[in-house]
Image (tube, rainbow, N blue to C red; front, side):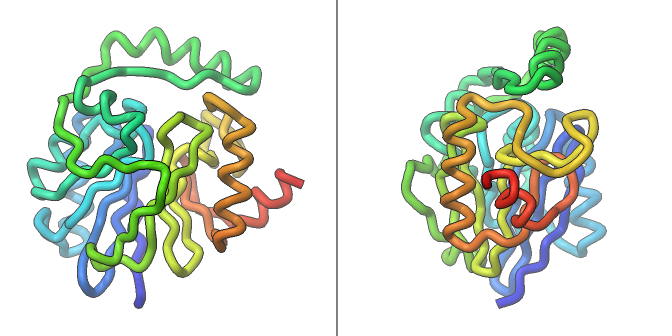
Length: 226
């Protein structure tokens, strides 16, 4: 089954619309107040809001869930988020991961000054993910959601049967975060990041789609882990 992959820039973040013959899903909801960009993307793809059957949030950081409530209202689609992070959306909890490189630590310090001005509209998490796998077959997508902690405690990735992997911030590939694809500069636990990557590679990840930057070959991550 063919899955069409459409990147959607939602502020600082890149979300993805995955469309197959039997349905479409959204991965990540970007920064707050990005519904205009979301609707423009749908129009460009000749999709209606109701065509989106599921909103998967890779984790609970503000720049990934900021427009989730508004997109949920527009589409009527349920929101899926790991149980460890659902308070971020249901209670509008704003948090920043620690930096794990010198630039990462400086970047977090700069972003901390901006956080008091960020507001997330709270909304209910309809599908509370756990540490197991969650099949996307019921939504017309040949793939599954996989628990991949490290960047945050409740980070998840979407792995399609084709080997396309949508990993949120488990990898990064965009300025000002980094100049080339690789492991994140921000993470709660880098050892878990590496464990999650080894697991994804073992499960057949081939092409990596980060929330920050362009897609790249999984071989780059494989080389980093050696």
